[in-house]
Image 1: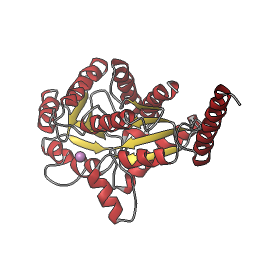
Image 2: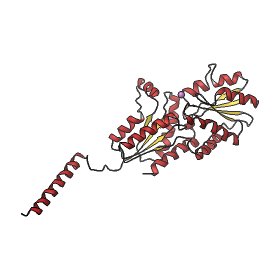
Image 3: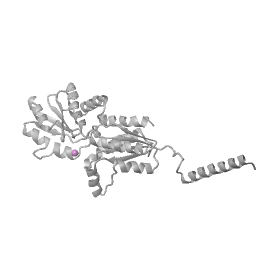
Image 4: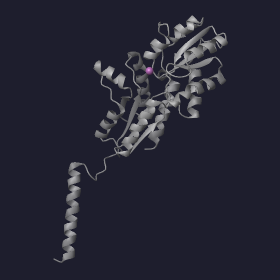
Length: 293
Ligand code: CO
């Protein structure tokens, strides 16, 4: 046997051996079959009333993408700890994505269910970025929160106008309670109020933990001599903030502050994710990442 032929036989045998071993292990060099998944990421809530919002979003996503497996993660560590004590295990985005990697997902659409691109959203962005950098998936893409682009702003204005109570008269106020944050994205709340007021001058947007504060909203209402206000959470769920900070009986709740100023308050305990026009915006944002696959 000549040397060239011998070399060729050895090479072929070697290549066969390598490909056989990688086939057996299902590992190196072998491409996993395509498996697409969705990860919905919310701040989270430990209030049972908040589950309505999450179930509503989940149903809408399942209706639109019936064949794509769906997972959940909560960004709030406090909420996850609280739920764990009640025997309910909720994953952080990091753990959820690690599990999806383990389950051999190749393409993951991560959808933020946050309202603005604040701290929680940016933390999530970093997490998604690290999974991307590690090459854990062939594709991993993150969808925007509710309010990101100018188009989202316009759609949100329409969604608010569609969901305010029908019995409300134009002379009565609608006061939305946003969460608020020290993050620069807090400016979205005042921007939303400006654009809402172009359509309906008696709609106001305040926040619990940022700007505009309730005292400012109160002064604006008094200046306009408003006598009655509908209070609505501008958060995906009607959780702790809506129940206590907005509609609670404590002296510093929005209801108490405004009532003391002579304004009759009607609190509405429904999160934005309970209304279709808002959910449509989040679900359309999920369509963005999925269309990249
Ligand atoms: Co909070």
